[in-house]
Length: 160
Ligand code: ZN
Image 1: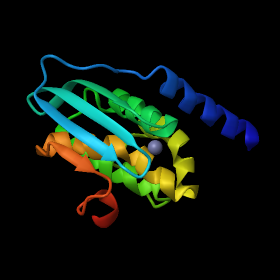
Image 2 (image 1 turned 90 degrees about the vertical axis):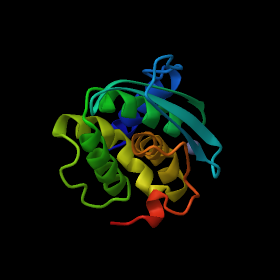
Image 3 (image 1 turned 120 degrees about the horizontal axis):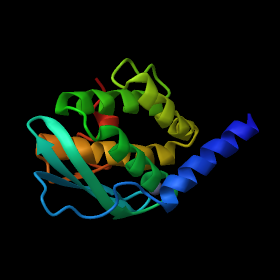
């Protein structure tokens, strides 16, 4: 069990230290800013769409290792997916991180990768660090410019 935990920690640190798809985007169609004031995590997400498919995605920001790792993983998994699929993944990810049945919004391969973040459910303060990236990409897709994890209508208030 502790070996598994070490592996998870290593993956989180790796993404945190060398985030994928990090940097601004010149030619974007959608943009949103995400803020998690409780921890001080702030990110911006850019999307380049091809019809309703996320052709390219990038993010920039600063914050704790969990928020940066989660953002990095999110961009890897969202790239190439349809808008509808991303919204389904956002719902499933939230359920998973709250320790609930995630449903089938996330494909098994992607779920395997995201499972490294599932441990945060033991640390309620960290749940918002892990979900910030997903809040933000969802905001970009629905045309919201900014999202705060402390907003009403944030995920925690928005139970389905
Ligand atoms: Zn954080």
